[in-house]
Length: 86
Image (cartoon, rainbow, N blue to C red; front, side, top):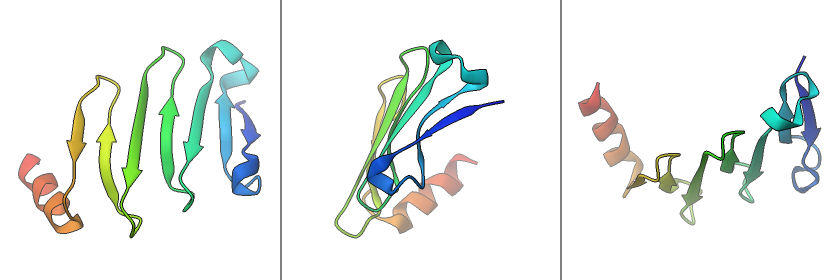
């Protein structure tokens, strides 16, 4: 059973760490933006991803574990790009 540690910066509403069966070596950690949207995730293999948000709370830039960076100019553009990739 996974073990989750609540994050005090979210009033203990969201987890800051999740460990399968309490195994700390397989732990995933998370941080959150002020809107409680995920800001970063780091996995047990030192892989990590991060997202920054614009002043309206929309995703602006995302870094995925292979260090690729994508920028989203607007939600409309993001939806169009997502549909093109399918």
